[in-house]
Length: 260
Image 1: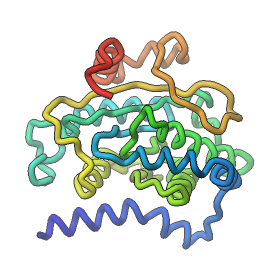
Image 2: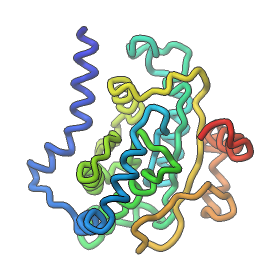
Image 3: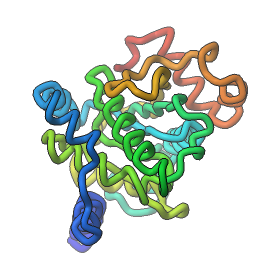
């Protein structure tokens, strides 16, 4: 019973943290969110209705390298007993049966070139929202969204939760400014409490997507990762930093019937 209350408390902290902080800091919605909600609310609500289902995917957005490394960690993660959620390895992947979808944002290179303060602050906040919109594409089937960059804990993360609240999207959004924050643990516990696991008996699977194109596009769609279109330095090292992720992606690319 104590474990149950612990899980519920953690989930509430993750889901309510951004709302509480927005109140404390006098949060104000950015113009970009207000505009797309005013212009496209029915479309956004339709996207929200298709998201957040147990059959969906765990989506990672933001800095390409951070998404890649975290996705690989989630493919291999074994920090919990999958039966009772104790923090004890059980030789079964924590995200067994799940599909992990890193979306590499190549519209900004390098990603850290946008500052969370000063003149670039608004651009960084918009960048977070645009990444979230790509994740809500109905072809992605997002059920949990992880914002992969500590900067999102300072700017951008609140804007994504603000958007989701306004369009009625129940997808949990996980982000933190703490570089030691464990996204794998937070994701596992939230999925456990909200019953978002597929419960399929299979190794974790991966699909790699990427965002290319103009910085001015509001509704950017993520396309399948293509070595020939990605920055050369990234494409050349992806198999080194994330061999399990890349191998699974290649399998799914040439045999799409394996998963969504």
